[in-house]
Length: 399
Ligand SMILES: Cc1cc2nc3c(=O)[nH]c(=O)nc-3n(C[C@H](O)[C@H](O)[C@H](O)COP(=O)(O)OP(=O)(O)OC[C@H]3O[C@@H](n4cnc5c(N)ncnc54)[C@H](O)[C@@H]3O)c2cc1C
Image 1 (cartoon, rainbow, N blue to C red):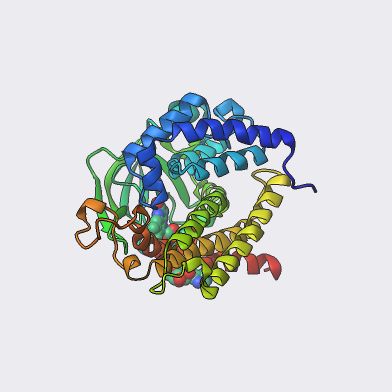
Image 2: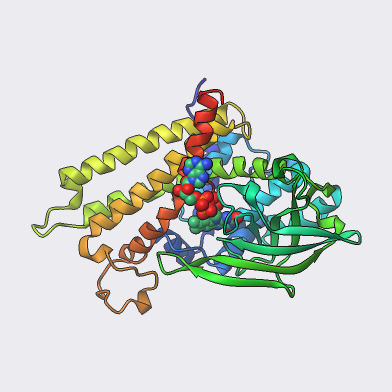
């Protein structure tokens, strides 16, 4: 297996770089660099720019709006987007629901939803987790009860990212309590967030920001055409497919490479009380070196997976990549805060509202502590590290 880039790969990289660096608005790039939660406006604009170029969903099959690039080219594209400080496009439509729709959706559902996901016209949120069902999705209590030829949904979802600005939800619900959830008891439904009966309550996370929510569903009516795949009882199969994709995506190598590059620049600029650049301090150098080694190892593992066939990830490999990728994100965010010393302790995400921030404090101070705090969630969302280790152990011991 040869993992080196060919001259065609490098030419492709240059083409993508030239476009992306010009296309990302400067203000948007600054917000991404600072690690702030992406705003709806930024998401919509960047989505629109890539859509018009035909690059909104390179990982999708060409017939559904993908680019037809190889897995390696897609990786190069993602690396160039991260290097240009472009925000991640909305995860839930493009990464999660889109693939579910083109793989399992009915032709009518594909026709109805896919183009608007691609263009960023419609934003989706993922209604899976509940107060007592996060790691164990089989414990989902939200019910969907048949009513005529449609369904009525009642229940509560928790930690729903972007529910406060999503147009629609794909929602996992119990459709049959007489069988096991894994054996036909669950179904995914698609519905509008902007309707009576949907209540969204914000949850502020450790970084004092709002990206997740509680969502209450009170007699939500869904027609038979919005049962994912048109078939009741397929929710477990659909959820498993979706979670596999989610874990691989979360290896986040391009983003971590960019964050590490920025961190090294900051380590050169920041000085201790004797005026010595932080980059020259042995403990800092050692921590940076360790992250660099771990990240290089992760990158080669991701590239090896891609070289062996995109989308063919076995569950334990996806789990391993997710564990390491999320820990590296946390290590980078923590090291940045440590580097900044006292300046790194205050949670600023908005320069104008940060009264205690000296006027000459560089931009990279704003958002650093908030990101470090939010990154605690990286080993929880998309399946906790303990759950991932369980998946690996099952495979290793043939359980
Ligand atoms: C920032 C953020 C965004 C999120 N966004 C979304 C979203 O958009 N949509 C959505 O549906 N969900 C979302 N989630 C929810 C996320 O998927 C769950 O938090 C996660 O799956 C863990 O579930 P839980 O919080 O219920 O914890 P629990 O499942 O109750 O786990 C509690 C602890 O027990 C451990 N544990 C549980 N079961 C096992 C086991 N079998 N073996 C070993 N250890 C175990 C866990 O590792 C954890 O440490 C989000 C979460 C966060 C933090």
